[in-house]
Amino acid sequence: MTEPATVLSIVSPELFDAKLPGLAALLHACVMAGASVNFVLPFSEIEAETFFENKVRGPVVTGTRILWIAELEGRIVGTVQLDTDTPPNQPHRAEVTKLLVHPDVRRRGIARELMAALIDHASPLGRTLLTLDTRTGDAAEPLYTSLGFVTVGTIPGYCRDPFENRLDATTLMYKQL
Image (cartoon, rainbow, N blue to C red; front, side, top):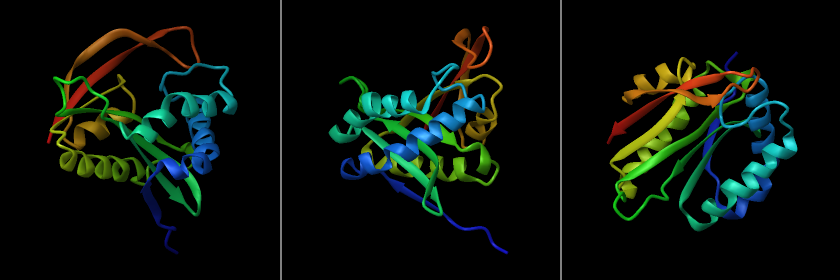
């Protein structure tokens, strides 16, 4: 039996509100599973929804952030963002943020599909350099390397672990397109 296909799409400003509950549920599930994506426990779905309302909606509406979702049988199971809001001297650069895949569907290539869509979309926008950071040692680090991202270095004590009172390092990476 074949698994259902994952459907990738860019969330338009008009569809943002309809996708908001699914995005919040995804972010909440990922943080609860230990994702180091700026949040610590306790963390509620309301806080997840507030993040998307306050930090993502505006840039999506103005066109400075592109938000992809991966849906499986109508449920949002993955997302990634391309932040193109760069200073005037960096119109060639964009930042990859918030690559999330629901813990229930990991290891199926969804993160790779999302990143491939993002990379393919960046070049026509005139973006020739992508940057990102990821918690050092996370599963995403080898994924990014396999996609051609190069490690610049690590910063110790960069972020607080979502579960424990400890600071984790982050790895800074880039990809030239």
